[in-house]
Image 1 (cartoon, rainbow over the protein chains, first blue to last red):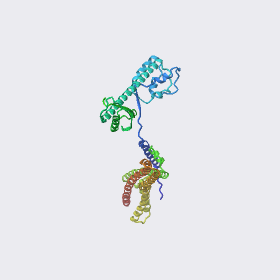
Image 2 (cartoon, chains in turn orange, purple):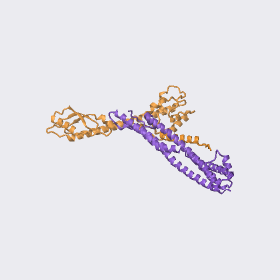
Image 3 (cartoon, each protein chain N blue to C red):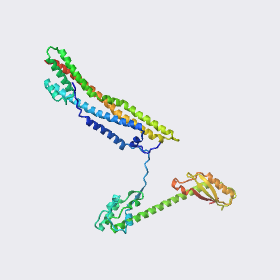
Image 4 (cartoon, rainbow over the protein chains, first blue to last red):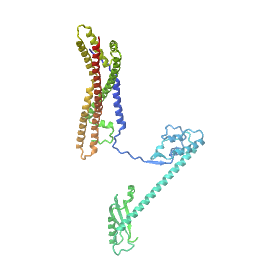
Length: 246
Length: 224
């Protein structure tokens, strides 16, 4: 007696099997990222305000046209939203300034923002305010750079003094050296503070003193250097002068 | 040998050698099939269990076996295994009973044989594809391992041509090869679990069918 078996669950079973595999591979593909590369550090600049004035000042003589390209940053779009009255636009801009502050931007946002064309209803007042803002940001940047340079200079001076002091401690003074004898050396350093070469730039006139200074320089290795590696280039070639009495 | 930086899943599979890719494809196919059977078995076992419970309730609450037999015949396509065993037994019993001159034990023997035949057929149907699951469970790790060994061999052969051997030269190859083992295990583990589970459930069902057959024989023997 032959029996026929109904198998109504074939198709659902196949669908479920496919679903299981799809889920598993989706999990593997999206959930697991085996990557051997290190994540790249991102350099950011902290800006008080977005430099939206840059395109306006560049394209100032051109008559305002409808923007064909959508501006990349939503903040800019909000500022440039159609405003019928100029006075209101200014108020709007002032209001917007608060949230714009401390926007973290990828470096060189000025170049990024340049292709943005001028907006239809940007008033002269808004432009001027934005330009003033831009000037202020530039000035602040320049000031910050100057301060940084000054700080670097201080560090360099400090470490040159440390180097000279260390060498001076190692000088064994020969007898009968006149007080005004001054030996000048060109010292070339390696990163890490070891001395690559020393060259007598100007003799003190007292040969024993010259060689005593040279020995002291070599004995003082490694010379103290700042931990900031970027400053090393200012220590690569040093010109140092030594007198028996300072 | 190129040192890949990106070890994402797709690149791992894409960069593997042809044989390893074949092994992976085979394992994927086997895994799909075994999951198909797993779900089929799941539905089948569940359905059979449900139908058995319903039929046993009906059997013990009805005194009239003729009604049950007619029900079983009318719903032959939808009948459960237990219902079919009952129908085969009852049919044989009535046929033998009509023939005069047969003693009770001969009638009961014939009925039992008829029921046992149907029972064997039902069990065969329930157990179909279970052996496939067992085979997948035991073999697919080896197949995956074979792919892995082959891939690692290739990775080390590539290393022989490189003057300065670093871990970075072999690591991607080994990672590629290990995907094959992972896929073998992925196919094997559910198959083993499903095999154990379903063979146990089918065992229980068969015990149930056998005890029903004994009880039904007793009921028939009491029939006038």
